[in-house]
Image (cartoon, rainbow, N blue to C red):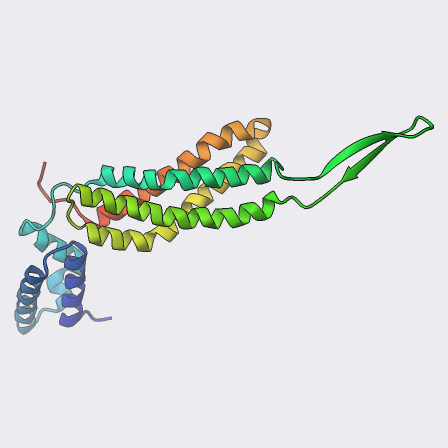
Length: 238
């Protein structure tokens, strides 16, 4: 597909919006880019040839050259805030798993009776484990709670620090969180399976501390990556 002038301007404008460049400044740069592309076309050069094939890189470079990119991106603060928002839902998810795994609410049981003839009879009463449906209801609730808590924590932290591009970060995080939460849940399940089939008897001691830590860490790393994407570093800063 041939890259047109309008396509290039649109992509560049979207990049500047994502980088939280002020609208007036973005409009000025868009006009300048349009003039450059028109001049290049009159010289027989294509849009892709002038830009180099990467509109986002060019737009970011222009914003960088004009000093429009922030020096401090608050990646660590974003990760810590995301972890704080994720830790309680992760612990709650672990609790729901434990109730199911341990049969804590399971009314099933067995009893021994002795007949008048001296024979011992064993009676086993089996009922459905209510911990199973409780877990499958509780886990989505934990994921939903994590979504809002993480989003709120990151937004509050960036606002507290007066961080630039915070609205762009929150918008991008809102889109990325479902994927991050699914990935974190997958890691938790993998740890549980590993504990069941490899660790064995000490599964609880292995899974209880590791699963919440890994799930929380995955979400924190993902949030920091989103912040990195929406707030690139300034070239040449220390």
